[in-house]
Image (cartoon, rainbow over all chains, first blue to last red; front, side, top):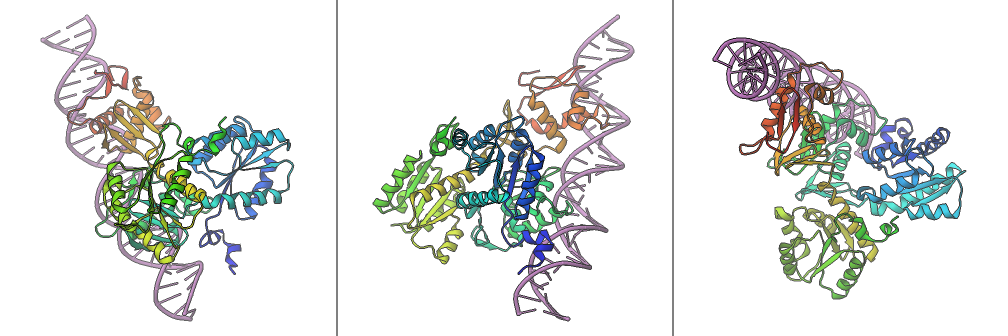
Length: 247
Length: 247
DNA sequence: ACGGTCTGTCATCAAACTGTAACCATGCTG
DNA sequence: CAGCATGGTTACAGTTTGATGACAGACCGT
């Protein structure tokens, strides 16, 4: 029993796996609100894009775990988004559920052709969509979330929550673990403190930006033995990156 | 339209039409054949080594993109190979997937210790292995790719915030970084100091125009080694440009 | 209730970066 | 060539930014 989970969003995120992050791409605001409400109620973290360009930007910025994508969209059609997402190696396996006005067979075929993972015809019940989301996530998990992350002598076993550096076990607190995990998923890339807060703490949690510094410090302390190179690179006025090369 | 994207691993690597090169290290010939068949069907190029010594020789000869490595091997154990591969800087980041007879916890930990990237317990389905191979390759790729700006021997990697000139790393302060970035986006074109102030400092920030000179100077200093040509061209009474040609 | 652990925030210190001004060098014009 | 105009260079003081250590509150298992 964890009563605090009901009270404090922060607690719900800790301990258990990170909330699956879902991007809803839909231009009808009424529908967006329904979706957001229902998905959040089910414990998903929801981001919204109202047109194609916004969607692509959001996906590039921070790839979600799943995209719910309207077929008809302003600026860039759902079909085209799907195609573009599939074209990039990083997002190639990003699960996509298409929303379409009619359940016509032809549309369905075209949707699957461009690589949607599932397909829900409007109108639909929220519970139906949730079920599909769950199903698609379940299907995609094993391949998407490999158990191991390795980079520059650091090994993270996500399932057993263990971290080694050059074979030596490293103890990390929960926040440091998630922080390292996030950095390990795209080593070399620089993330601003704001991005790190969003990704590691959660989009809707308010903490002081400088708190990131402190956790970076703690991560460094834990990770670096006396004779190790510091793998966390500070980029002044930009953020931090995990990086093999010297500063 | 590219329906094959869903089916064919080769397409995933599209762009460079080079097949990923996989070394399978396994002594059971039956298993080797199964692996070879399946991997080749998926568009990978497969090499085989049947014992540890052969494996090390093959890796030194031509480092593959990924190694599928049996835990139990004649002559040199998989564990030992892994260790040796990790020890050498050139192969330090070579992705390794371990094949192991039992999924026992102790083995798993030892596998982690030597730095395998993933871990598949026998017996396994070919498709499972393929999925892992894909996942590991996908994970190991992105470090090399980012949004790059390139001109005249200068490479700016925006996502990792790194600058190289002829392969040498260049350290720039934030302002110099933005300045160079702006110039690199339209090399050859001349910008007045006012334009540079607008673009690099921001439209509504007031600084002395001559400040641009100083930052140009700092940029030059950082960019030009002792024997390099100055790539920043001064156009008297007009401004500055990034330019390959001599002054 | 009690120690231990984990977190977020602050205050402080050190280092890096920035803008400006003063002065020097070079080019241009008559 | 003198005299102005423009750009180069340097020094420096002030500001910004990051690192670090300390600390109080929350939470956990006992």
